[in-house]
Length: 135
Figure: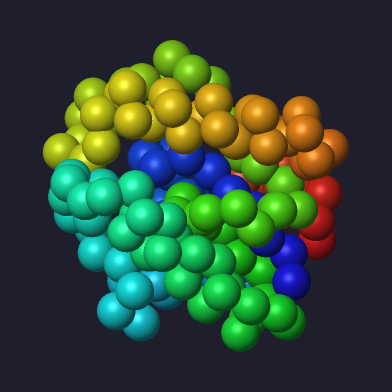
């Protein structure tokens, strides 16, 4: 499996739909499987419930070992690569959405940067670059 993580509202769904030949939208897959909902990020729940929710999604991806997946929901499964688009562009995407706040998205960006540093995961600035690198 090739697994790429990106923070929410990075354009992953748009990229998979338009140019991501052979790539699957892991977040949409989790929604379709009933494991996630688009409004989940706005729901208030205990940390243990959030952890269980995200771990279930990580485990779900294991069933797709022969696929290439881009996901914006995840827990602690180490990806092959992380996409962090330009921060100013990302802020603009977030400001145009009714999804998570910039503060939440920024925290996820920070978490992904820490994951990259801790585990040696490569970070790139676009989904096309990730696809080019991972095939």
